[in-house]
Structure formats: C-alpha cells, structure tokens
Image (cartoon, rainbow, N blue to C red; front, side):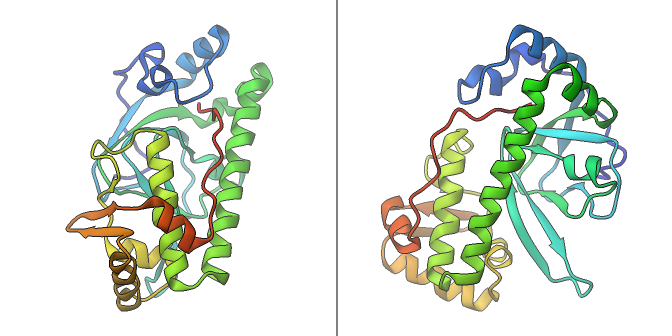
Length: 251
C-alpha cells in the first residue's frame, strides 16, 4: 500500500483503544485523551508484506501500531536489505519524515496490521499544547536509539550465535510486553531471511547458526517462525540482561 495515499477509516474510539485498555502503557490524562482523539484521523489496515512507509518519500501522516507487527529497513542499490528494527503495538512511526523532510528508511508489515493515523501537520500543536505528550514522543525516540545501540553492538561485536540469541530474546521480550502473540513464546511470522537481514549474515550462515541454538534446546524452528524454548539460555548466550520494565508511553 502506498504510504502517501492511505485511506483511513475511523472505527475505534480512543477511549476504547485496546492499547489504552491493556494497562501496559502510561495512562493518558482526560485532556490528553481528548486531544489524541482529535489528532487521530482514523485507522489504516495494511496486509502482510505491504509497504507502509517508503524511503525517500514525504508522508503527510504519522502512525501508531495498533495491532500486528512489521520492520524498519534500508536497502542498497543492488537490493541488499538491512533490517534496522521491528515495530510492535504502541510504536510510533513516521516522525523521521516529519522532522527531516523525507523518510530515510522504509517500513513493511510482517503480519496484517492496523495503524492509527495522525496528521503530521498537527505535530507541533501537540508539542505546544501538550508538552507531556511531546516528552512521550522524545522518550520513544530515545528508546529507539537505545535499541539501535544494542543492535549495532550485536552486529559489530557479537558472534553469529550471540547475535541470533540476542535477536530472538529481544523479540520475545518485546512481544510479551504487549501480548503480541497468542501462542506464548512463538515468534511468527518470521523467516530465516528476516533473521539474516537483521543480523547481517548470509542465509546459509544464519541457518547453521539457528541450528546451533536448536541443538542447545533454546529454540525450535517452525515453518512460519520460531518457538522460544528457553529464554534464559538465549540471554546467557547473548550476554544480554533483557529489557527494562517501565510503563512506556504511546500516542
């Protein structure tokens, strides 16, 4: 779907938003909730595999992931792809295109997704009239930077097995924090190509690496993803303590 011409349709009232009702995020004040209700233009439904935002374009909209998940990525001229991070419910996307004139990465849906649509032109009104919400956006940007720091460390210094263990542990913890998957520790849909493009490894090397984790009973490979068998083993292999437990905000 072309990110420049979404067809938002208002279906879910903000006070009935499943993210608000989940208790997993910072609660809005009454004034903040009223503003967000007017800031929101509707919802965008994206099918698995569709492109939500395109590198080099200037989208008039911002989005909060309401359900489903996807990934941010960049590509080289020859088509090689680097997955930068994954977007899950509560994540705010499109700010880069608002502040830097155009998107410097793309966003693709891994599963079917529903996104809340906001008007980019009203972003500065949010900062002016609701500084707490402006701080929330700054917090989200800082958190994204923190995650990218860890990803860069992984690609630059961790071994292949450590990289894979970190990625799957990271995705599992993020998914658990927003109850993304109904099957507990199953991460799906996610292919070995997605893992390879995230870790900066060839597909053959990725397959061998995941087999090592399988042999240690840390994961089980499924047709459409992975099952986490022992999260503690994955963290130990990666040398990673896990995500901090905080009441994170969302817009």
